[in-house]
Image 1 (cartoon, rainbow over the protein chains, first blue to last red):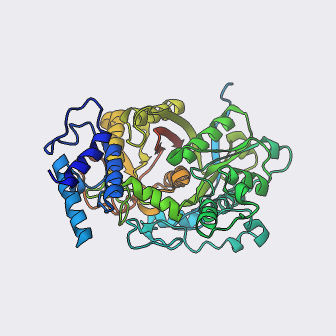
Image 2 (image 1 turned 90 degrees about the horizontal axis):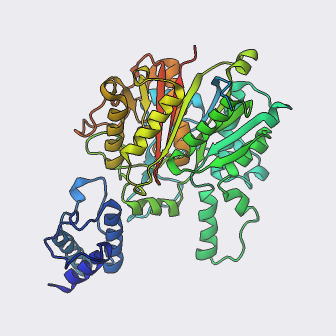
Image 3 (image 1 turned 90 degrees about the vertical axis):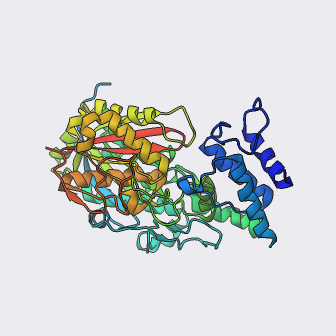
Amino acid sequence: MTNIASDVIAVIAKKVRADHPKIEMSDRLQDLGLESLDAVELVFDLEEKFDVQIPYNANDPKFEFDTVGEIVSAVERLVGKNKS
Amino acid sequence: MSDVNRVVVTGLGTVSPIGHTADSYWTNLKQGVCGIGPITQVPTPEELTQKVAAEVKDFDPLKHFDERQISMLDRVSQFAVVAAREAIAQAAITFDMPLSVRTATIIGCGAGGKGTLDDSFRRIYKENKTRLFPLTIPKLMVNAPASQISMQCGLRGPAFVVASACASATHAIGLAFHMVRSGQVDCAVTGGAEACLTFGGLRGWEAMRVMAPDTCRPFSKDRKGMILGEGAAMLVLEPLERAQARGAQILGEIVGFGMSADAADLTSPDLGGMTRAMEGALADAKLAPKDIQYVNAHGTGTAANDVAETKALHQVFGAQADKLAISSTKSMVGHALGASGALEMVATLLAMRDGIVPPTIGYLGPDPACDLDYVPNKARALAIEAALSNSFAFGGLNAVLAVKKFS
């Protein structure tokens, strides 16, 4: 697992119930109990941590992130773009 | 207290993104004129995702107030007073004694003097000034619009602001309606005002991730969210008997008011709360679902609101839902938060008076989850005997008004 992936998972873990077992890349956000406001807050936390802008609009289905892995790759892509 | 009075509307006033009078606002609503455009009041840097809003354009305070007055009036109070003066002039009513002390001023406002607040914070934190303007606090206080109307128009009865975010004006009008109906007051000036298009405010809304980058398309497929608006609308309410005795023009009758709280999610709409507010308004009005022809929807253009509101309409109206004409005038004037319920009440009353339903513009085609008749893109002639106007606020606070054609 990359550093970014473990950092993203650490951010997500703060939004998930404390009793939830280890978060996997394949976990679906919905199954982790994340609701719409959690998603908005999660995107904010990730933007602050990685200094990126994530184009997320809660009304637009094409910006939906389904799994933890999808968020990790989105952040990796955006961080990469910042460095180049 | 027994409900002794029928309550009628005898005056309307409006300051909106598509007209600075109730007449011009209504003419443009009927024509489907869109008031949404690039924001001009504050800077819109490249990374700001939300660069459009429904601004009140070309509003010159000096046309309405002298410079000394302007130093006391935030933009929100300017809108409020201008709309109230228009409503009172149309009602052709004079607030002498004893009517002055028997007249309520109940105004909805969600955010108060946001422009004054934003300017003050910029002065202190960015420009490192150590002094603020002396009238900063009374300009920005959320009750300022009610205070200013009462002062400028000489209204000495119960006066206060109701703050329930996007339902503020509907709650205010509903309270005023009940006070006139019960005989607690003999007249009310009521409505809502908002002027929230500040840079700080825009950043706050942007952070919620519910704003559309382009325009507001309520109930439409491919809708992308809300668009902010601003403005004010005011109504003069009085008992039918008093209005008739003085030969006043009667624009419509308010007959019911329903309220509820979701006690659920902070921002997600709730079917139960919406349903109970609409049912409450119908019960208060002693109307059945089949008596209603038009609903001015809350219709914010977010994915969540429009689906939940459609479901709630199905639940309340049953098989009648398919026969309703429903429109969201937010498609033309954006979401003016604490003023929206009043802007929408003016639209609802004039739609009923003239037998014309204003359209939901920007409609691109049906969303399978929004399957009712939203009067897409073009106004429609329709005889309206009774109508509802819905407002559902963040925080789960819901308010619905029922109106009836006066006969």
